Length: 382
Image 1 (cartoon, rainbow, N blue to C red):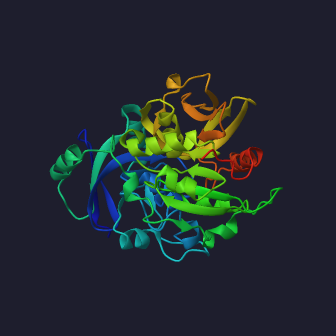
Image 2 (spheres, helix red, strand yellow):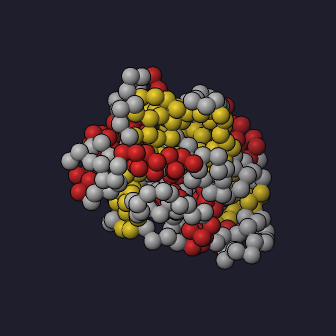
Image 3 (cartoon, rainbow, N blue to C red):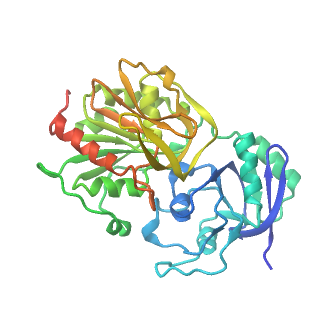
């Protein structure tokens, strides 16, 4: 018989269920994810640092865990909340069960929760701080922990997930699942990636175009990266509040001034927005899932996208003479993409590299390489 787990929200709601994963107490920001598949990719996404994931799909764990689907070296979430945990693993690629894997990395989980009711609560009332115990801590103590936790606003979470030193991406076991592209022109191009918590599938996608991908720690100076003479700079996804990252905003501003082609995704997009003078604001319950529609304004085409963010750029703060808005969310009209009119810079809030999908936005990576070609190899002003 499964041991009991207790989940407490900061407003006082107490839920009990079955414990799985590690025996631990943990405090986090609880968000719901509407993806129907890809729980391993979600759990290993560094953008989820400091958060617990409530899966709206009713059943997870049936495909187990395998090294090829990792987006980072370990689980990044603080906790997992699900309606039902599969008692068996049926994928031929699996090397362990979800429960064993979470336990080995110290991540607790709770199952047997009415996730539909809890999702509606978060949707109606907004994201909440929460505490989970799988080792018997009483609800009153968990409530104190949740209310005392400072949360993610204005915090630097990037420092917890960025690499410790620069390295060249050599590919991994998951690279075999990514289509290799061939672009006209001289190869290879060199792409400098700022690692704010970069997902491996982004690196796989960049490398799939024949690029030499160099990954740099988040707090590497702009001058150091530009001295490496890359053909383009990529600003990655990452966790937390962009308002808590003034040094990275300053670095981004210098990169934009360099004239080098720059492409940002998710947090990278938000940093570009703040570097242009815009504010960012917290969304009520964030965008987390693999079924979010966005509108490409130039063509009127709708894309189904994967998303994972709690903050967004305030579009009214952008100068329309300088910035063109390229994508909008069809759920709430929030800003989903932009490009600069006078510089080779563009960004999207959603995830075109999404694994396992959807793949509607994958062509955006080709746009980055086409922009680099147009600007000319090593077109730098320094």
